[in-house]
Length: 73
Length: 174
Image (cartoon, rainbow over all chains, first blue to last red; front, side, top):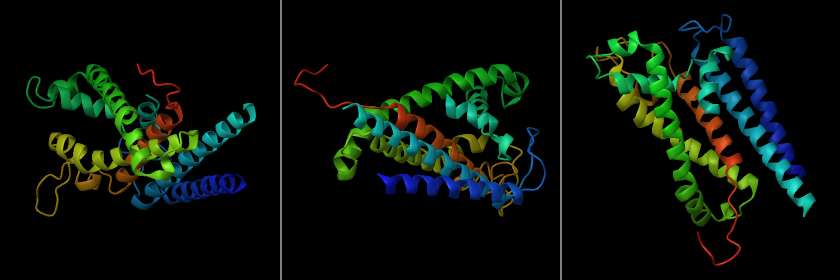
């Protein structure tokens, strides 16, 4: 259980690092005006990083639900 | 719904906006009045019509997941047999990833691509639509492909966390 938690947290931290790196690589401020800032590698890193973050948060929530279910049985 | 709304917020984190409502609306209204003029001139209608289509789309894919994909994954891949929240989430992520590939390889290039007349020219001097695997999505390159992955993972996580099937406790089926 502890190992799974460490993997989830590792994925979360990796995602945050990638997203932050992508944010600094992408020039200009975030904008809702089309087309907004364009940088292939920077925006790819942001998207991949946030993907890891979303998956990690999902795994943490699912793990928490499993631990709660085990606690109520 | 959550993924669709999040796609509209993507520019807030410097990503290309993924407005699937508008894309579906263009696709539905492209034939009305000839070309995209009608859809361009009626953005609210385009958004609502496309939104309804996209919601129904999402529901159909979720039902296919619940009735076919989730049980089949449990049979084919032994570690995914258990019906725990984590396993359900992993199945949702697998289905989200599969739909990302279908969307990037088939749906967007074959349906959305042809309605873009203003897209950049490819090496053959022809409009590239959205390009193979979204590599020519308007002014964007490969980041559109990864942004599409992000969008589909949001959908997969929501689906996997919400879908919690129980094993039948008796022989009674309904």
